[in-house]
Image (cartoon, rainbow over all chains, first blue to last red; front, side, top):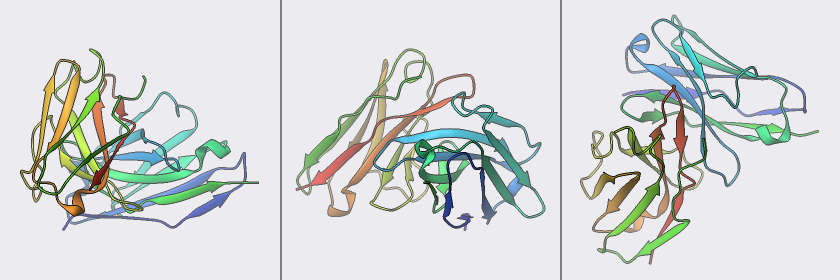
Length: 116
Length: 110
């Protein structure tokens, strides 16, 4: 079955960068777009950006433009998200989700905690 | 873009029906038929339950149904069950490769 498995939790200091991953299995990786969505504690979901599994084209939310980089490794069927210049407002669970008429399925989430 | 507007909470008894609204604008919900709904249980990842306004992903029961009128989308859950107690988020395409979510609605099954 389609499965997205994300890397483990991260703790970073303000100003640092973080990079985490999402490994896909159970489908043809290059035929779908992968999205990243984050959820701060008790807050709404927030779309961050996406990458085409095929040609690697990326789209980013204007809010994160310049701070976020999404990449993919087609051989490893893995998508990566990097976020720089972290602040406490970036403390959140970051989810990867396959674009398929909506976001489906979702990874289990990666908790990123930004704290001094 | 601002978030889509949802009621903070709704409730219903087992077997009843509830409807959750999702209010947007003519630039998002009103402009596109790309509204989706997600169910999220505590400390779990969201799960897609409706896409393209009123379509069901495989495995989702038809007790869940979606609709849209103008700038407002709605999710109706009929035959409420205890396991339906969760947070529900709406989502809409807003053009220019932008996606926005609602603030979420907590459903309580009494």
